[in-house]
Length: 225
Length: 85
Image (tube, rainbow over all chains, first blue to last red; front, top):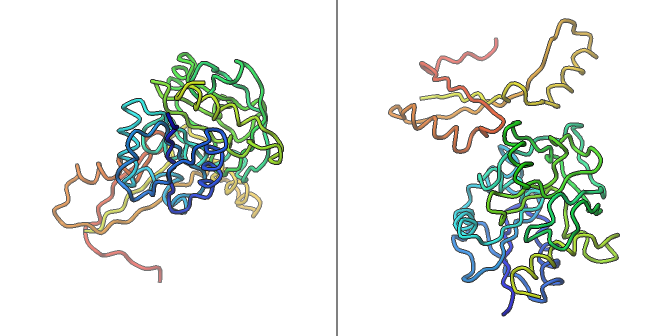
């Protein structure tokens, strides 16, 4: 059975093509582009990816406008049904603004845009997206963001940690994120938001291939080995 | 009816922008500034009959992010806003 992934393009998305190339490279099937103004996802979609970028020019707050675009109602319904949703960078911001993930992404503590490859620790390797990694494995994935400073109140952070919902953590302090959190999961584990860009670590020419296992995990988990 | 929505960071939420501005004020020689917090002012022009509940819903649904921000609704009694002389 062919793997059917969809990726959303918002006005201002700029990593949507990278995401599409990563999904096609790993799954062998080109994903379907869905426009923010559409109200439906493709029938039988196996995975929905929200790419990085600056949707709606980061108006109001990063991800705030995109979170209320027509397609997000369909993404919420799909997530509720258990369809895996991956949000990277701006996609993570959109997922928090849409209420699909807890917390918020604030301006980096140092006020600067951070663009470099950082070490990340895989905190939970028993999820659809991380099964291809070892627990505690340190991987190197690029970050490129201005608003990646993860914030949630202490009770929420404790709950996330206790439930294994911190997927990735910065090994070194990166942007001021509470508890150095780089990626979180929803309660059911089918929605992952992360600031680092796994789709930018697929080919050797990217400077590393540590992002491959994330897509391989998802494809394998969804269509079988 | 003119409505002003004041959106501010919740107490305890770090405001790096405010901190940078605080440092800049000190650098300019202004003494006695204890703290700087930067928020956002959103001005709405709404129908007279717009309810408080509707304004609350606008704030909670979009204008403020309740994870990190508080909001305060200020209704202007009339359009008596004065420009600085």
